[in-house]
Length: 233
Ligand code: SF4
Ligand code: SF4
Figure 1 (spheres, rainbow, N blue to C red):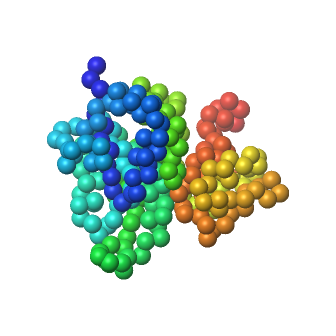
Figure 2: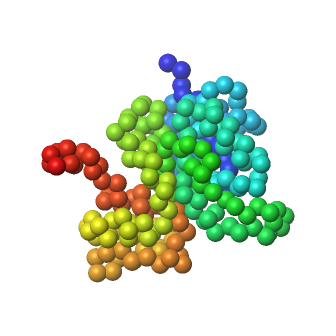
Figure 3: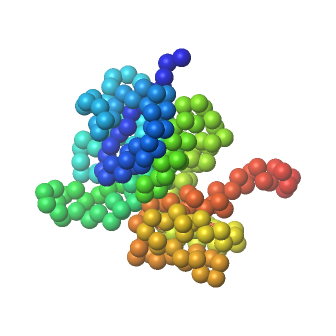
């Protein structure tokens, strides 16, 4: 059976997500052995997305709306790919790029950076700044083997919509769903969350809007339909 064709598309990102993938050490060889990496500017000398269909495009970084090449590249990746995956906070939620305001040399007009779902349909999100190596590894293996049980939570369209600690306030804590497990606090890369009286407390000044806490919270994406069916309500 032909190996799935994978493209790694680098937009306005820091390459930290790719480094996180490489931080799987020898397991990286499992991934590279299981796929046909047809485009990856950091690792291979293939300058353009190849002609023809690509199975999965993994996208790192946000899109700068004033950069014609980036806008074209993400649209081309969407057109050619069966699945588009937003890897990391910048692609999934905008992350630190949400704070860009332009005005800096040598491209002062580069002022609007958006997560990729503002321009194209995204099939799966792996938030985090960067996402943990194990998560990227497990995701890649599940994508190659078609393990839908593992992939489903990443494919929930709403994952890309959550990007701030406040999302936990409105979606989890205010709905009495928080169980005080502290997972959000330990997943935050900037220590913007402290547990106080058994509940998370956010420091908005520290929050880089990566979406990691929302993605990690075990109470954020409850399979409501499944539960209702079981309870017959
Ligand atoms: S609170 Fe922390 S984990 Fe949550 S979005 Fe902000 S920086 Fe990311
Ligand atoms: S991860 Fe979710 S359930 Fe756990 S403490 Fe944070 S908000 Fe509460």
